[in-house]
Figure 1: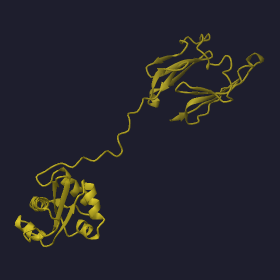
Figure 2: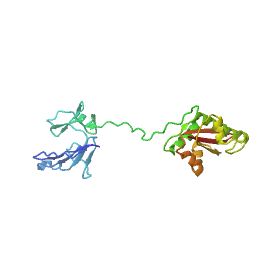
Figure 3: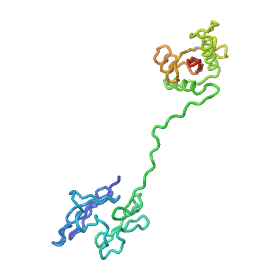
Figure 4: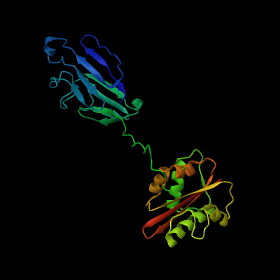
Length: 261
């Protein structure tokens, strides 16, 4: 909250001191025996809250109590009035005013009198919005794309999805499902490199990761990252292409991930 306070001594002299808070600190001194009840300090905030520094009840005759009749010499309504963004009210026989607009606020009726009120700010936007979910493409469905995205979080340079490599990976996952085996070598004796070449993939170096049973992209990625050999394929800086294939096989997933330069 921005603060601007005034320290006012009411006797024969009026003293004002800016203190940097929104509101005013007022000290009223008795100037004659008949004013003996007006010696308690109070703090008036622009939001209308009035707090007595000694913790006691409002002294009789101050403007902290229920609205009364304005004293002679000030012809404003009891609670004061708003003239646009200017708040006007009575203090004793004198009229006081505050430019709420200069504070970025508006004049509004408050507790006891009109006051300056700051606008309610809009809620802060989410500082960390959820990232967009993976999208499907000809190269990868949503789950396969999630595997690619997770692999790229481990690397200094991202891998791009290659459709021919993805086709080789999908075919191998489905073949393991259909024929009930789990190996880098197909039942027909082909290696991962044979299967990629058969799909038209050219490369100088390549690698393959396979997994069985994990039920999500996150779990299969974590399993691979926990294995030194599989992790080496994922972070290998010489690779710049990837293909991922998932086969959902009666509740047991088969995963294949192939890499190439």
